[in-house]
Image (cartoon, helix red, strand yellow):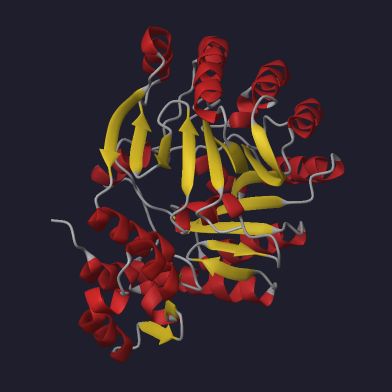
Length: 379
């Protein structure tokens, strides 16, 4: 099945027990009273947008979807029982240690969830406390094993490196501790300080002690080498998987596929249009109740927009993009548009052009922003 035939569904649950200090996602703590009204509003959007459509992947993200009670997850399960799926639909839900229970895990099985993404970030308890997490590594491990016992055989672990006060030794231990649990997938991102976060304010006040650039580069190298030793295949800039366990939903984004987005702050791309929903919980509920349309931004992609997105997303993948897929989609050869630029980056050892494939070298992956900035068509 090609990406032109596949369709994904993303559902946003914007509630958290506590906001992590680095997080700029649309997630809110202290709004427990709005969960049920939100789910009722979400039901209306899901019913309208999914009618007559069949989904190859479903992804429930947040926020913290596992913050919902077993009863509230049951409400969501009833809504999703009306959504048509392919036989082998990949159905992921994000969970946080500290609020996932056996009872909730049983509801997820009934819902059809077959892939779990669970946030670790670090196995060092001091670092976890310093970044605003609500769990210890022991609690993470107990939750991971409980999910295994509940029958989940496709689990991703999220790790963030470059944390305040983190050393190479701490990161190496986190990677080893995660690998000992034998997950099928590991996502490993470097910390990015985003606006409207506690860390952004602390950096502005010079009270945030981050690893220096050389240490962060060494951490990046350690992640690659250690996960390679542990037989995790790197298939995207920050994602590693055991054979056969790449995340199909995220590949849909990277391969410029179509997906529906439901919930506060959800994005979607369908029929050449990008839509973004209102960000706040209260605003989302009001918009659904008023006219059923929570979108605040709608953009029709130009041909140039789509070419850029095809390249910028597809080149995140280690195996790069297919030149024939580009030609099929845009009725023009990539080399006719960017030939001189691409040949220059090949000479500089940043790109590889082989047969039908264009991909980054290892060096090129590290300098991807520099290379891709030469492929901007829109002003």
